[in-house]
Length: 440
Image (cartoon, rainbow, N blue to C red; front, side, top):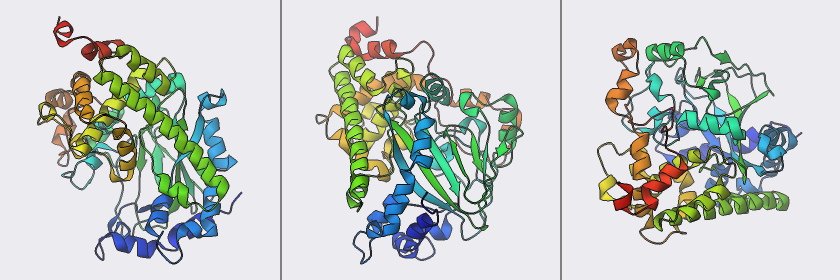
């Protein structure tokens, strides 16, 4: 196996100049971040015009080889049951390094999925023991956790992420099996008091140097101590392509990274994954155009190509609803009728810049103006995914209302359960028939 010391060498050799470029002195990610991360694709892009670009370093080749090896990619594929049946392929989603900060930041907060709700609001306060237990996820940008859990229960994991420690690392805590269920009453009560302390149901993951842990990211987990204790932990993620489950419209590398790789076999592997992403985007575009045309048959056929397993397709529909609003917001195509006070921050501001190439690739496949129509078709589903602020508040125990720091949210979206009695057929009926018939 490739010596793990190669990865920090390739990532950290040019780190100073890269981080220095992104902000004023003392304001870079390295200077102020609680958990500074640097992705290898970002580093390759940032140094491509340098005299010694990272992509041409032999350490880069060997670092990528490690990520494509049997102990990482191979094990990840084994953890995705559908792939073992010959359906689909595991591919690299991201490669980065999590580092200790230059000053103590204390603990983070318990969360699930790729973003936690507080992190997506620009007005969110510094998290000091404060986060609502009903916002342990990103209910704005992700399907409800219960929908994700049910999809995974039936079709297996479609996304696996890793922490591989280069120094002893006990930062990560998880709640075992929480990816299968909602928060318990005890957990809700504990999180209402503080979301930045150990839970009685939690388990500290104690990694020795060289150890790794793989987990699904909608398990409840926590970064317990972002202190100056030296931390260099490789963070990898793998997702299933062309599999029964469609997990993410999300990726941390783009074609420029693939093309910069010096090893021909590595370029070929990433090229194959790029072709699978292109195929997924063709299916998404077909789904959206079928909605515009009010063609329920074509919609169902394209959806079955994207999420091949019959069970859980509504989870993918919800995911596409979320992503369509981001695409439209990024293109300035959100219809005025959808710009309400409750319209979410994520939807208004559009996609994450790191993922913009994915959104652009789907958008270019659609006829002009069609994204706004797609959002109109999704409006009824979006309405059903929302909850009132009063309903959100009613789910909190009394101590949550007394927490001085609980100023985040409500977000107005259901965080666990998907709409009851509203599946693919009901969704299609909301736009497939003429409006006069739909109201009858």
